[in-house]
Amino acid sequence: MSRPERSPSRRGGGRVAPIDMDNERETQKKEQEQRRAAAAARAARREATRAARRAREAEPVRVADKHDGLVRVTHWAHVALLLGLILTGLAIYWAAPVFRHAPTPGNPRGDYFIDAGHALASLFGVPGDTRYWLYERTSVGPYQLANALRLHWLFAYLYMVCGALYVAGLVRGGGWRALMPRASDPAEALAMIRYYLGVVPHALSRKPWPHPPVVGKYNALQRAAYLTMPLVGALVVLSGWAMHKPATLGWLERLFVNYDGARIVHFTCMAILGSFTIPHVILVIADGWDTFRSMVTGWSVRLKGTPHA
Amino acid sequence: MPDKQAKVPSLGAKLGAAIRRAAASAAERPETSRETTRGVLAARSRRDFLLFGAAALATTTVGWWLLPERAKRTWLPGSADRLDSLAARVGLTRMQREANLNRVLTFDDDVAEALFAKDRRVRTYDRADPRPLVINYNGRIPRPEYVAGWRLNLSGLASGRTESLSIDELLSRFTRHDMITRLVCVEGWSHVVAWGGLRFADLLSAYPPAPGTRWAAMRSSVSLDDDGNPDPYYVSIDLETARHPQALLATHQAGAPLTLAHGAPLRLVAPMKLGLKNIKALTDIAYTTAEPADYWNDRGYSKYDGL
Image (cartoon, rainbow over all chains, first blue to last red; front, top):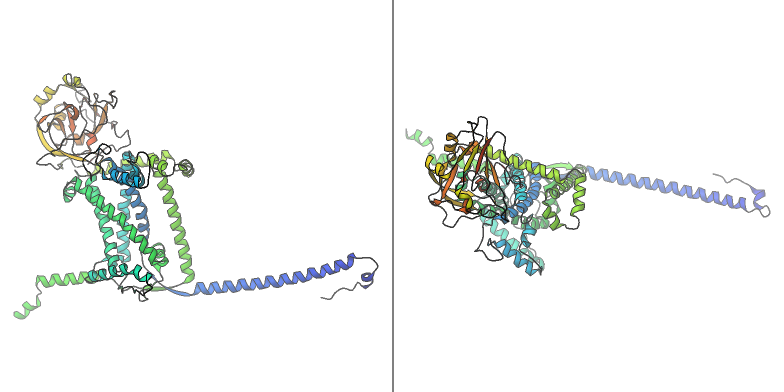
């Protein structure tokens, strides 16, 4: 573009404005060009980014399908249901503890849970009446029997449905095979225990500490734990029915010797199911994001044959 | 012949082969992998994690809604009311919760009723528990004056009349049956007790209920509350249960007549029901077509209570 000539007036006495206007137009035009260039550059960059993303999205990845959809859904539903069952179950337990000593003035039922609550509360320096300190933190609270029973039945029926769907998922996805015990399990389990015991000392002394070889989806300890959980789940359901319907299901009550036998088994199963989650969560965190994600999405990019992280 | 015999495998060998086959089919298969693209994985992950988050949020909301008021106020005293009104905004009100949880009780009762069989005997024992039977009732033990003038009043009979029976009439007219059964409390404790008394079924045949009746409304008008004021106790018993041979109108416990604390002179012992149905110091039985009210059902517990 050529610049328009406006010569006479340019030097014309005292008229300043036109000259300035000219300058301004020039600046504007330059800016406009710069903007256009910048926009074009941005568009090019965006296009390049898009292309790169498309290329990345089109990149092939190998994944292994680890967990059937039903197994994943029921795994997470179990977390909520187990929590609900423990919170309401302990509130029912409060009404008539099965583990108890001779009555004392502050503890007429001789409930060890009340003793433990007292001890913990005084450890934390809690003032006042601390009889129900532990029950208020591990259950929906004392004096909640009617509420706790209704909720416990609700969660218990859902728990049985959840368990049945979990087993269906194991069968559908073939996942049950990875849980079956093997002849080599005792030796492998010992190797794993040795490994876990050595993890922290070796990390501190910065010495290499290789993971024992794992043949299959899980190591021997995982196999044992993951098979135990559904079995204990079945036992907690059976002992629950034995307590709930001891007259109708007399044979089931007898299986647990007597009514209190079923209560003790039920309580012990609860303790096993509940305490399983502690090492389970720690080990999943240690194992990393891929392991957690595989329980949500089902797939894992950590393929067998690649060395264990 | 020896040739043929060698071909027929022994039972042990067959069993061994079956076990090997089972073990082979249970053996873990080698991991299979599939090829996909990063784009597909990203889209799937996004969808799955969004679903996961939505489900976690829904579970937390419903969980909060279901919590008993006491727990809400113990755990989040500052924000319980605010969270409650938030939950109410999506329809999760306290009334809704009560209605739904009572439906759970009804469902569980329906399961118990479906499982009931009139011919199934409840487990009996050779010996009662040696320790004394717990007196679990919150109210006061009635004063002994009522026992002398005690009568059992029957209504809703086929005869259209009402009957009033004394304890001597009941003891002399009906055969005494003894049984040692377990009394199971809704709280979780239980006690094996030796009972003696007449069969409810025998009373039903001597004084048949009106046709079409399905329930016995059983009542103790002498029951007292904690302050000593009248607090009638009432339970509903289905007639199927009442006709069960192990449903006793007990007059004796551990070989001796019932004490005041355990429901003198007559109480219900139905070991196929929760302990709270085993009404003490029974004074009235009315046979009804509609299901009568039940003391503990009115206080949030289940109603059929079949064990």
